[in-house]
Length: 408
View 1: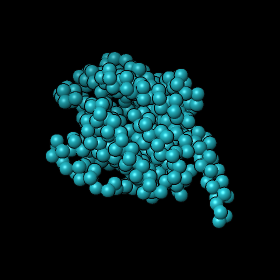
View 2: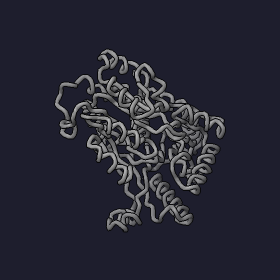
View 3: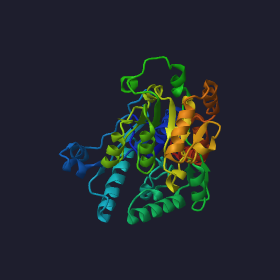
View 4: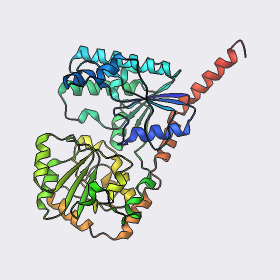
């Protein structure tokens, strides 16, 4: 692979998601390649409204590229956050933003001397990039059914149209769940299912170092601790269910570990129970230390068409951690009845949590064994098979150009 432009729906930060794992693995496999990771745009107008002029100054200055800060050295990965000048609610603003952002991406490619890059799109709204970078191929990686998010009718129609167009234009479509595989087969004749994965060794300390002192953020949580990891998003977590469980607890803690996107009212509802704690975003490197405090891992997700489209990374992380698991019957978790207790309402969920606390330790070791083949390394082996035709095409084209050069 000569070069890769990877357009993400998320930033590269301390909270690692599918995109960072894939890029990190690819970067290590192709150390001579250059990878441009395009994160979320810098919102210039929002910054100005909030009195923060940094996005404005950065948007007006020459585009700067950064290397990710990570324990794994990735000198061949560069980060870009293009400017966003106008609210996307305005059709003209959306078109202008897209034009400016695509110019920033092309400029960054020129800076990095990236010729005929492979274009990887995680963002459906980046469909207009296709054909504008001189790319060798286009991969569309679908991680959620974004049309099922709570949004306006206009935004939903736009999402559906962009997704369908990108499925048609992409050389290959990758999906992470069975439901997405069913949906995208109707739109593309080249769809591959590659679920999320896990670095199992990263979570080994959850069981292996259980006698070690806990980090300060978790040291004083009242036992038992029922823990959730991941973004606390209103389209995913069932606030009413969490509240119901908390009200049935006479002792203990419901720890919600991750960035919180709930409304202020929902935050107040849960905090008022006296059992729910929010940690905010936690670095991927620190997450296993926090999880050592858990007595049970939980997934109180809503059961909706949106959550049906997911392949939750937390499923593999919970299994790798080994701790007992209780979840609503959502995609992924219900596929492992031998390791996950499923419950639909607050009474049943609370009872399942209490039972899970008493689980034999041997079961915890079995969980870790089952994820041995679910590594990100193995997932990227499958990714390489998908991108191979376009990487080969790049190599062949470069070779032909070399042979036809008058000095050869």
